[in-house]
Image (cartoon, rainbow, N blue to C red; front, side, top):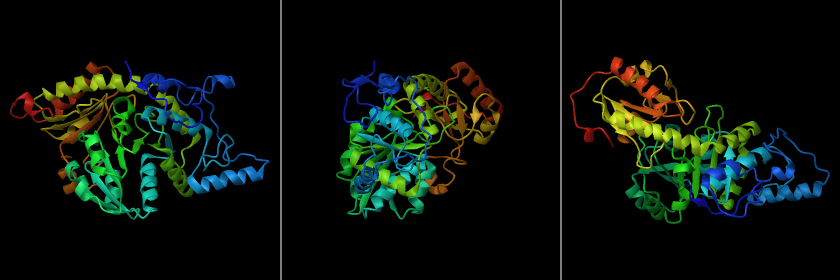
Length: 405
């Protein structure tokens, strides 16, 4: 049974809810609570780029409020770059699922991370402390200093010592992409002190983990993945308190990294099945991880204690041959769709990371990352078994305890 979520403070579209509800219920209803009162069942898609206003004084006041603290325009929109009603429904729902006051959506996960970095840099806090591994493009954005930031890479135990007066952010990802390494969020949040902790929660989703409950101030999602859930929408979102949300809205307005309303609609629809999809895929992933761990063709399996639908494994043979040998599983980047995907991180998702840094973070050249989805487990295993049987070199037999991590 789901644990009830606290009512908390949430944006518009959620004003009729008065009692805590389980996560599965929130996934279906959050962001939609006002629909029945409007005589609607499915949420509307508002495609307007601008909105008429016959009260220019009131419009000026709304724009002044936005310029001051990023306050939402309210019930009467002004311009699509300030906000959109359909996108706002998704933001309301995601904030409810993550247990935060607010959420701000962007055109991609990288746009969302960029907005966070820009918001902190604007306050003179350009230094970031980060723990590897992160998603490859996140790693590159920090390492290259493309937004004027400076990064110190450390392990979780070294976070407190790495902090400086100009540190604006600590960033971690757990389970991490692609090794699925896990971090004690409560311990890390304590080590951060007053510096905001940003947790990339893309792999876990709020179904398995709610970082804000463990002290994280910012929760990042590539909403392209599990939140959308069908491989047909690109988006990013940051769940946070309302104060920081205001700054993010100002950055979004200034840079133009807005989410299209149709994408907001698809994400809201995706959230309604998120718990069902994640739990079903996780059960299949756990079974495949166990079978891979017992297979002598596999050197090591990475599967997180928290569970989830992601499995990473290192082969004794040629990983590229395994990629070329699958027939049911799709060899492609990304994850979190309704079909199972497999990719070679050292060649694609983490290729942009320096090879030495990549390997130092545990991303070996023989590592494969698989996003397990909703197919039958026996069909998936038959496909994997065939690819491994035809393409991998048989190693010496070793014990099961050596295979699973």
